[in-house]
Length: 383
Image 1 (cartoon, helix red, strand yellow):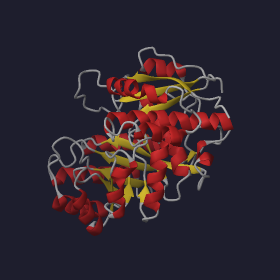
Image 2: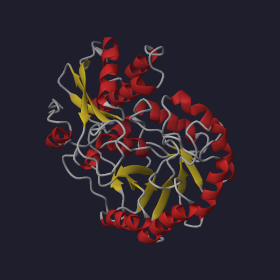
Image 3: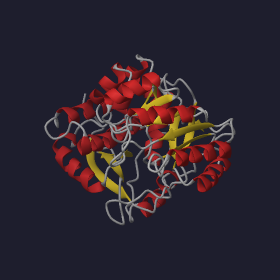
């Protein structure tokens, strides 16, 4: 039977704007690391994926992939994505090409949902939960500023919080503890607190013994998990730290392709594994990673330092995973807030409802995306 829904075109939509996260720009005054990928089918269905890579790299990857995706099925996401992976072993296997395939795969799952009239979580096999707890994710500040940021997020309804990077691990132990103490006092004992050391940042100076000592301090403040306390390639260090740390250890946001996760899962190098749907290969890869982690009693916490499109995918992935319960939510952040047609609302318990509508179950704010992308208008969809 002829497939009525094939890929007609794919384009990159770079997002600029002014991020509220105060992320230090290292690649010029208009650093750009969030890129949407728009897929349009021959039947007029349009959808978006999200890629945590700058637009020139995404555009080059799309040019490389064009001979394979043009005319390919738009309603067989896993098969089409795997075909793209298989044909780019010599020029892909991670990095920008895999990142670009991530965005394509995400959009294809949404298209499949629109064609079938089903939410993505059902297409992935069903949902274990109909609501998910988002944690407000923000960069660390000096102790006196940290409390104010957290209290503002608490006022927006969040009941779980992750603070990371900034001065933590870069100055002295006294500063580290003062920041964590200020955070705990700001949100109270009833809210969840997570700490991200930022070990994947340039020239991370610490190893296993520092991380173990820091984990002991964090345990005193009831921290749920300690994220990226070591450099991202220190597999043996993570194995030892996870074995001895009094708090849970999280990591792996830098990895791409499901195959890269195998030794981390099989050696139980983390308690919480953090694939990023906008990097790892899309929903197809991340769902498989999550299932394999579940077989090894490892929790999945999607890494979500990206966009509202990524958040939508993470909600469906978390709903469809027995070993997941949180999603990351940057706040306040235009890449999250300004892409949704209707503001995302937390319930009184600080949870997000998992959409029941077809595909992602969200409508996008064309005007908001145009503002962030210097005027690019997304294509209207026939479904």
